[in-house]
Length: 337
Image (cartoon, rainbow, N blue to C red; front, side, top):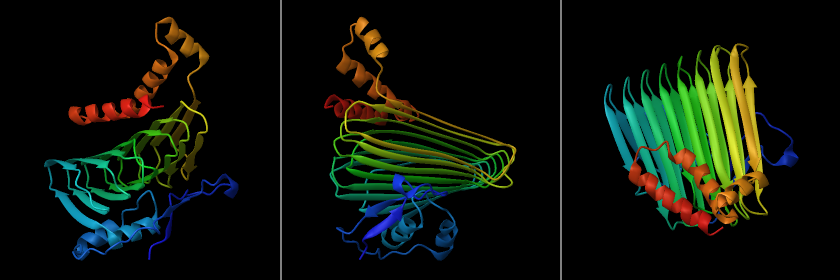
């Protein structure tokens, strides 16, 4: 019987009383059945080497209980995949061969007590993969999204993540930049309010020379919302000439919010460049005064700022119909604040 999993672990621990070294994913109230169909041993072995952001406990659980689907993009080909029909626990294994291109869109909505997704990517040299995840579940239940990627020479892995629904939300992403001049780009937008919680763990392992990573998180905390963000850029020995940066912007539009941010840069190499920064707060009196002088009242100004905060992430999605659905959900969520 599955009870509690330790997830979203920091690679370098800090003071325990801060309660950010990890978190617990409680699955004790759910029943799980093991899938009858097994993944081919050769494929399983290849993807066992792909580390995910939420950690080994969850990866082991997913490998045992998830419905698994394997997708291969052959050399020089391009594929676009849209996923919306999700089981309770899902795992997708994506292999992109040399000079292949893959875009995966996962749209998760509806009324679910538990919705779990694991997505693993293996990118061969000179390939590109982009994962777009949009979650607009009803405000109940538990949701997790666990992502991992191994990125070879001159390849790019991009992750665009929008979290607007759910009650207890967990997200992790790990990019292993093992190839020279490989890249990882991550953009996340969210809204948390009314006892919603979001726990994030992003990690860029910059292993080879001249790798690049960029992590951007931008979101809104309304009354009763809670968010923890762990962002790690790890320059390994041998990653000379690599560059990494992470930024976070948190807009608070209500009282009784909880925000925890842990930006972390680890250096095992001298010739690297790492940057991080964060801005957290509500709209200033000066901005509100300016908006009011233009005929925009305070509630409208707050809704406009919240809308812009999340749409900054959604702008990286090419699907105009999906962006329109996101925009509609943002307006509906912020309107009730």
